[in-house]
Length: 395
Image (cartoon, rainbow, N blue to C red; front, side, top):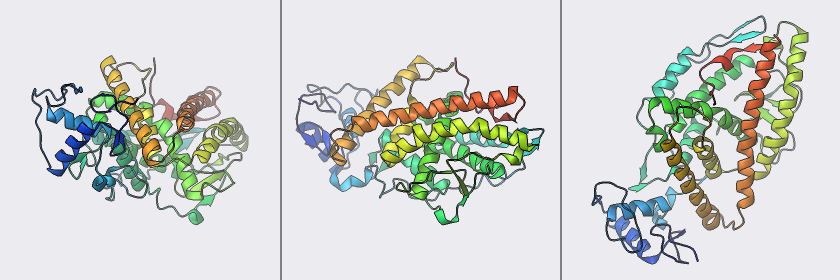
């Protein structure tokens, strides 16, 4: 027998698409219908809700209902839904015009890209108030819904929802300058995405930066491939991967003549990148294509990448334990989403494949760093991005 996600009593009932006993469901319905405003009796906001003490604190009981995912049919627009975005407004981009599009210095196979202004803008974003709405129609959004909201903001800000595949240039020539501008824009909006998440927003500045550095590389891989598939279609048999929002490449050797001094160096760089590209296609691109991930699943991936335990110094055990609890809550939300909204009873396979995508994306990031290190040691090419503070330092 299942248990009520609010108070823990044994029950087989489902109310508002969630495992929930009748008493908690009726309490939630009355509270929403009357637009009730409660205060915690003990002022701690963490009263324990049990079958014998549900009347002790109505505030904490109502919060427990929200965290369990209860919602009235009339409030159905609170569900993460690809057809009904949680974020409706057009993102502002006013602070970026002075930093995007600067020149990139290429000299003696060394690529130097000044990130000083980019780092300042990321710091500014992390000191702002939290992005997005925390409630819709008076109901608190869950952590998964806030992640969906942040994702939809990011997609709009990056113009990933308006790309015309007919306007994309297919080329094997790496468009270095356009790619760097696109990457910088990605970094800024990635920071804004994370600022939609209350538990990220509440971290101190230094911890925010640690989590951001660990997060962006893995997320970049997954969202870039998803962007490629939504642009060219999941049924397109040809492998096409976006460089930026103007150009894409096939699963063929890449050309790096733009920042190589000789054809021989360009050929050597192309050879070094061949195996990593094969890895991307076989272990990330093709599995993602078969899954056809939606916004809710991408939001779940965001939470998994962000809140999974880190092998990094300066992150307290208390924060790590709290984030483990958030991951458990998001797993419960995914169960409800698959079982009650998608009618997928055997969803374990999809979650396993999603976990593999995250693992393989992290593995690629490690390979990429090793690749650039090899290029630097043997003086084939030197891309100084990997020497900046945007890359994480692990124990």
